[in-house]
Length: 119
Image (cartoon, rainbow, N blue to C red):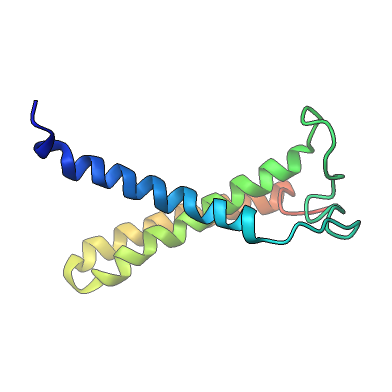
């Protein structure tokens, strides 16, 4: 077994670990640690910080997250389409229009069901 063959792989792993661990260590060593009531107060989720990890969450948080991911991925699929629009022709254009129509139908369905209403 020749170590010379595995040197690039070992170097890649070492550099990856250093790049991943060094900022965390620098932040914990050099960063200020001054917690106050405002910093420990509930932020966007509305739950108290540092409570039991097994507490029940409202299902609306999950629903909003899933809907965000769904419609965010729509944009991710539209970027390659927009870049290659000249090359894909009419068939590619129509297939994306069908894709968008299905997403619009899903969006209207979620809207009618009240999934986007926040109480």
